[in-house]
Length: 444
View 1 (tube, rainbow, N blue to C red):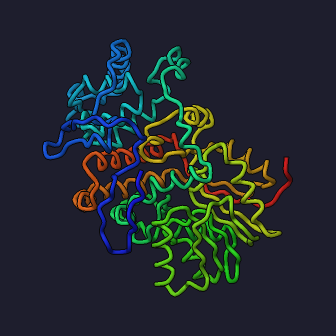
View 2: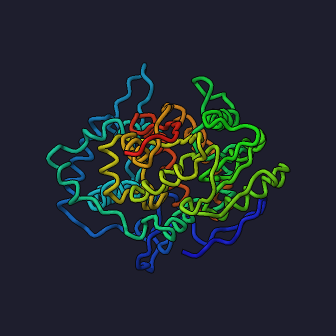
């Protein structure tokens, strides 16, 4: 994939490619999707533009299992019967059932996502449908077939491995899409992680205030104050570094994203804090020095299981005596993590190549092996569901602005599905997000 042209704050550019797509032969034709004014660009989206090779047996099995599951969960329109006194249930509407079942029969959940990207199905309540499916994910496929899972799903591509070069490419494919894209749905603080709301319902809460509340809680956990030497692994667009420096800390913050680094540096200069914040384009494995505090917010999900030992060793080795680590991480169940680690998923193909969400057991195991002790561990998953709802609503409300940036219909459907899919994970309890305090302990 070609490197996108640089983005300056306030300047719009049209991306050369709307998203990372694994290199594959390019079909010559384009395929029209549900929206009559747009077509699937077969160069950008080869696996969306063409249907997979017909596999009648797999398609028939997918049709049987998926249709049965959708009907049992009362999700499939027009089969949904609505009680006039009850709220309408979420519904999934199939525009092209044959293509929908064929994709799932061939590629499982990747096919399910690609079918949505192609406009072959829709929903009047996308997160609602996905939440119901996520809550019953272990019941949708009979146990004997679940044991054959490895024969059905694809393995993760070796190219996605987070070697130093691979990590740079994986970060580039997501975080370097366009600063303006992220600004369409994030709050003005440009914070791309779970907020912490003061109360529920959060519909009328300030998202920026909730993001600052989350950041301040992490800084408090790490005891960041005047003259604290702070290392941040994963800069984002700089909001945590700015708030830490405003407390008087001296911050070194690391990122692999050129787009984020450029904008974070501009924000630091604008705040008059360039003497207290050093934004480095640097792999976490190359971190140098010792610090009173280390903070890393939702960065471990991009590390990959093969590199969790080196990640936690980096955290440990960066600590000065008596130092503290505040870590924020999304988590999933351990069994689900093991399955996901061995699988090429729709998210890993289109949204976060090389990423893997850890389990709490994995976090405990690898942090302890690196000589770190868990002092506090607090989950607040419902807050992430609300954060994602707000992001999704902002994104869909600004579809025209996203289109003006050069992102096509397939990308916009992909991003809406990504946000709704993630929201459903937290609403169903399949995912959680945790703030963890680590200090130096005794290695195993």
